[in-house]
Length: 222
Image 1 (spheres, rainbow, N blue to C red):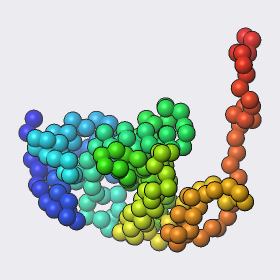
Image 2 (cartoon, rainbow, N blue to C red; image 1 turned 90 degrees about the vertical axis):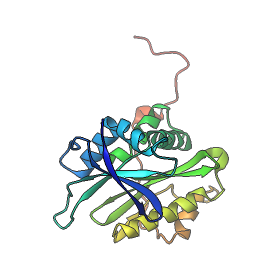
Image 3 (cartoon, rainbow, N blue to C red; image 1 turned 135 degrees about the vertical axis):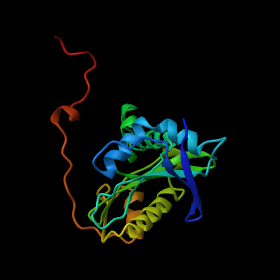
Image 4 (cartoon, one colour; image 1 turned 90 degrees about the horizontal axis):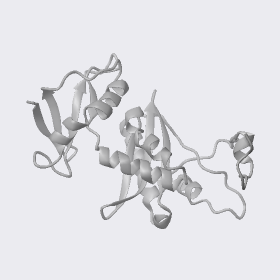
């Protein structure tokens, strides 16, 4: 396999742009091509950004056709599968979800989300994401491992995502969290207010009745 690239510094980060040797990414949109790259071309990412050809701080991208008429090109960033797995694990543990939810959350980037991890040394301890469409940014996936809560990770991730939304040209940024109630701590709510958000409304979350029933000690008869 012969792949040609051009190396740049982008915002102070080493950035490797694929210029040839890789088949066109399948899909009609940048999002579909991003999903194809994450699922089918991870061997290319590993070849280009990991040692011995790359290093821990190396990033890269495929250049693809744009979605918008006013754009000159589209970009699909090479995603680290290990970081995606860590993002999924942190999300599942932080929200106390089943282990199966980790693999779903790990695909957030392939589904169009821009995602961040907060590290304690080399350990991923918190994560968060933003989905941008039509100049609106939605903040979600904010999760922190229980033993690392209250250390400022989510405040830092909020600031990073708001800056990303501004750079992406968003006019509006939305997010949500649990309702603030008397006697019920809500660090997430306080973080959101400190970041400059204002509460617009309280919405109801609905559950199927079966999900609220107490588990039985013995299985139901056939």
